[in-house]
Length: 72
Image (cartoon, rainbow, N blue to C red; front, side, top):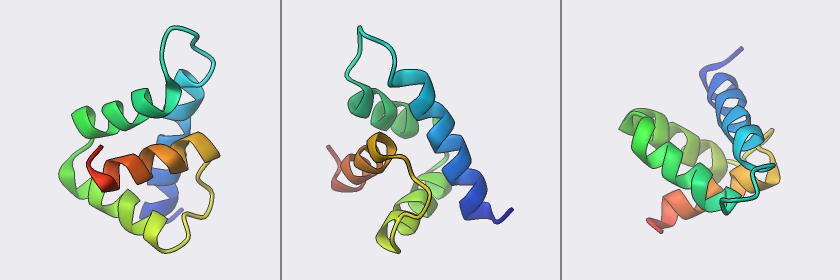
């Protein structure tokens, strides 16, 4: 598995944790988690992956990475 593949898998796992929770807005929670707990290099790599099509990212994770990219 490539480094991008590992990051996609990890990001999607985070999404699978937050999406079913009723007390949080999942996209915002995913973006916050990535911002707080991922190394800057990991964040840059997942944003670059999104910029190159974002293959494999689940829809809420894709939206969270877009928010992360925009600095929201």
